[in-house]
Length: 325
Ligand SMILES: [Zn+2]
Image 1 (cartoon, protein in one colour):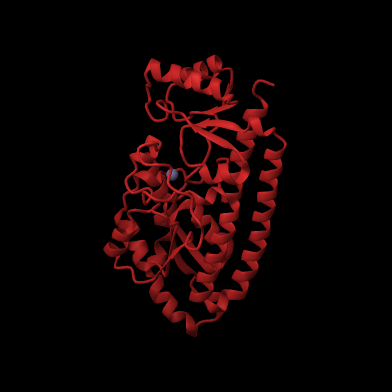
Image 2: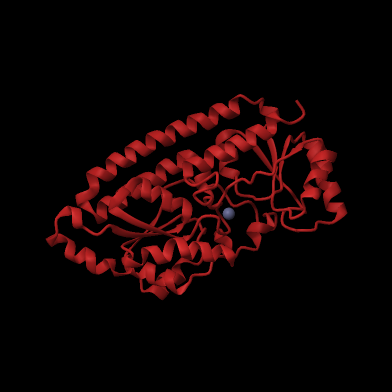
């Protein structure tokens, strides 16, 4: 609940003027370009909001429904969200079942604008397997469509596609800004390409057999496939705040047997337990969180998508390099 306070404070209040944006856009033909109201865009979650800002610049006004540091699995639309969607000209979603709540929200809001699903046209990975999924995701209603894994943004090459889709949608809705959108998208894609190269280089510096990580959040399958890393689930201890002694012992055996060198179980509430798992399994615990489904706050280590991918890569590779050695 505390998170929602932050999110609402950051997004709704400040952007209230855009509730009237539909009217403003209608007037804009008669006004000089400088006075044109930015295009009101709503995205389902914070990572997409960053991508839309990168492409749209000052010609768009973006609001994320699920804000930084907030949990897309536990999202419930507020009345302010409904009003923001009503006033939006473009709604940007991930697709692949990530936003199971979106259609109902669009109906409540009477939304008649365009819905852009940025994963359309990509080849998705299959879902992590019913019943075997991490409880973090299993308890989140409608977080995937049961068939596909929605976390496609964890592979930078997929985000090149996201950015292209966003560029095309903005050009359709705001032809006057299209040249600018194309330029900004091209510049940003060049930065993404460099990011992809950088992540590859970071992993290539680590022997393939050592690229094994235990995580408590089953959201890194695209990353795993793209960059040659194996993520193993922290079975039995991923979401339980007080896992059983047997579950902890099983996890320790699993880490040893697999030769895992880095363990990320930041969701465990008891830091002494994390220490114990790491000590007995002979790995170094990492207390730095990995960011999967949301950006951090602006002061945090993952305030935008590129920073998020860099942060995860640095934290993962440092944990592996610091282990055993
Ligand atoms: Zn997720």
